[in-house]
Image (cartoon, rainbow, N blue to C red; front, side):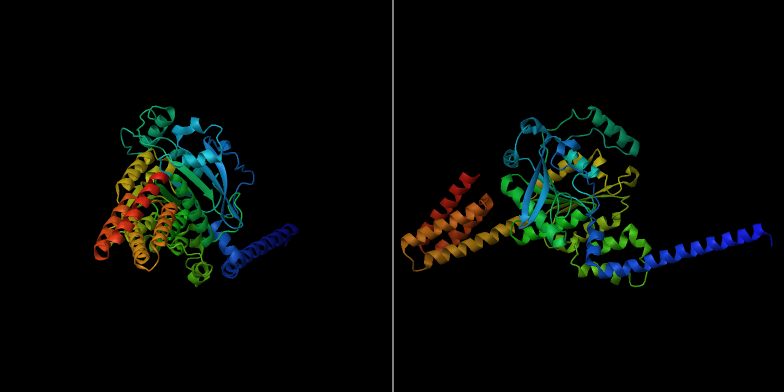
Length: 466
């Protein structure tokens, strides 16, 4: 054999050895990943929340760098030791008023009767990600009407260009825009702490209650995108259990449960047929208290729900959004109201780009009108329960052996406490009136007198506070 032949042989042998080494390394990594996932809780959290992926050069204190001009950056303390970063964007029509204003003005503006959206983003990145900023911008303007619903991707693009050039923007309706409160959960962006399902739900709940306390009569809605749909459903359930249900829920690209979402995630296809897939991955998330059971949470409440999902979603399959919708269509729970809007695949919106749809402002306008017109049976039920509890407490107060002065003082304290915590809506007062009238007939005229004083106190405090 010639020297050239021997050299070629050695080269082929070395090349084959390199290929074997690469293949062996790949096998070792492939087999190791399930065991690492199973044994390392930090890895589980990082894989699910992906909060470590972000741009290090974001300047959250200057929202104007992202063309969010009538926006202020806030820092709120959701619980001891946890500070969350929030952007508050006011409706576009108030941008001139907002110039140079401080946080106190923005907080007061929440009570201007414009609807408020608490925007809960998905995993990865932060509130400055492009598609999240663009969604906020879409929610600024007064809602608009397009003359013709586009039927193809070309018509969609033409309509969008016309809107951007001002040909359609002139057709403004008198409907109001939105306040948007976009937060970064703990561990995301410039928020402190480490993420967990319970923790980021607490952050969302705090922001919702913070905004509701300042919004007076304005409706406050939860908007959850992707992983944020799980946070929104958790929050809505907690609000329900506290007797103060959310005014409405908008879910963009939602899933049924986090287990099912992970099983359908594009990365799971590499391990889906591996023996023990559920034990290694799905059960491990449950063991680490990452559950996000949207079906169970939403079925336990009757808050109206609007679901938005693109047919070509490549992260959370469209079928999961449809399955969530169908799971809420329970004929035995007539109070629950849910709507589903599908965006055709030819539009190319995938997972993050529903904001590009020129019809989305109209869809949201119809949804807000629908939410406002819908009598939330859950709210009525909660208020009636509170009224019944109040009636019982008043009966106890009136019929005990205390002095007249002490009874009067206790009734007034009861009225003040309840009214300051949450002003009585008219329907609750009417229910309490009926309850007290019924009880009064069965007890004494003295009881009716005290109850009348109590209700006058509630009415007066309600008038002062609203």
